[in-house]
Amino acid sequence: MSDIVYMMWVIFSFSAILVFLLFPVFIRINIFADIVKRKIYYSVYFLRVLKLYGGYMTFGKTGAAFHLSDKNAVLLPYRDMVDTRKKFEITKGFLVLKYRQVAEIGIEENAALAVLAAAVADVATGIFVGYLVSERNCTNCSGDVILHQGKNCCKISVSTTIMFNFAILLLAGIKIVLRKIAEVAYEQREKSK
Image (tube, rainbow, N blue to C red; front, side, top):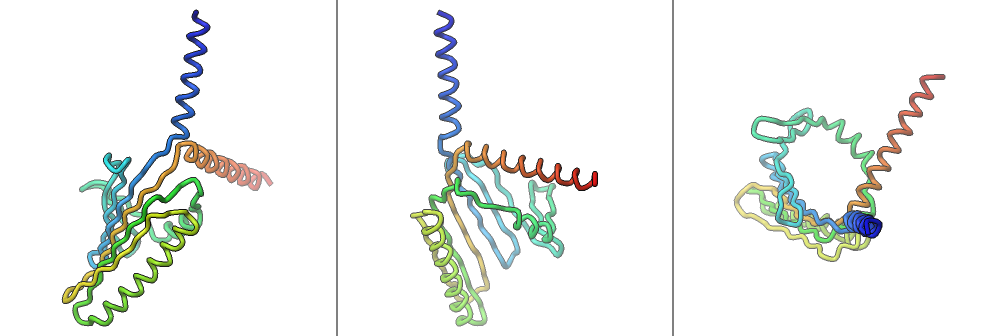
């Protein structure tokens, strides 16, 4: 009798791990940028309801400050951002389900310049949405531009929902660890020469 219970427990555990690794996870990311105030607010939600993280970022002369709380902030120098961008690699395992962008533009002194900026923003959004539809298979994309008359503003609001599973995260983590091991082994081999 205990062998049957043990086998059932093993099958149940294996099935639970398999479902956990392959079950899709939905993450919603909201970003609001106010260019005039030089701040970016962001939040990350699990299943659109549970807030995982949120905060804001400000820009200084040497780098961007990520405000983790009212009293704590982390400074990320611009030079490090450029180096990080070169190492960042978007994997095909993340599926963009929804992308929504709204740009608010207004120039108090020159309405024609505001219209030109809105047109450029609309074209850039169209190019990015075209990329999402053709390369990332996102079918729920939209972008709008709101013009303000008589006030200076430049705000961008982005909301996106991505889907992935833990198997993809596990494989990406293994890939990062293997790269790091290869780098350390290469450095040690170079030092020993």
